[in-house]
Image (tube, rainbow over all chains, first blue to last red; front, side, top):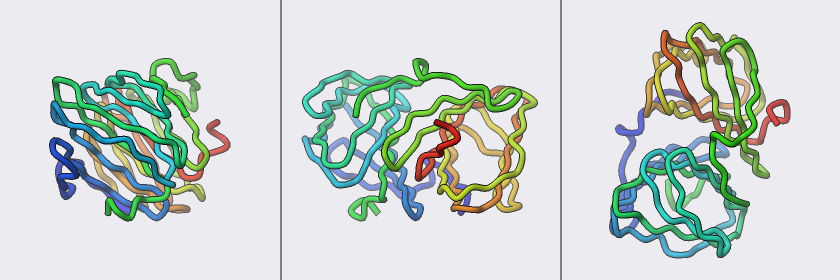
Length: 107
Length: 107
């Protein structure tokens, strides 16, 4: 239980140009990503259900082969085991991904 | 699975000055709230775990008796059955609440 602020959460560099900060509950995790221009999140899947919200900027997102440019205010849903990938735009983007259950590898 | 945008989600008025739009997955729900000045979410609790992110503006949030003014970029965690309430500020606020499991009463 409690109050937090994104800027004070511990930062971790997941890949070149991909910074992540997470907050975990019992059954849910919020993961805040900052994507720098040129950053790539290669295609992958996981058993966790995922929902995302673009907080700032835009990036290219592919879910199960369907490609879209997603922008601030856009939301997406990635069911368990569905393959997805992301590619940064020419400007930075900020994204919230919610994982259920929390991803142990992101804690 | 899929792509959505907040502004296209169906809107529902929960109480005076409290507008809500939701997106449900299997195990998680995103609920986007807009709080107008004067809006009050009375103290309540539920068996769902909740995490929230302030998207715009600010409001007063009380979790288990602890009162804070939360602002854009602030995050909070409400474990199952913990009592909480909210009171709008003098300007509108936008908030994302994540519920696990999805709240049937908000679908």
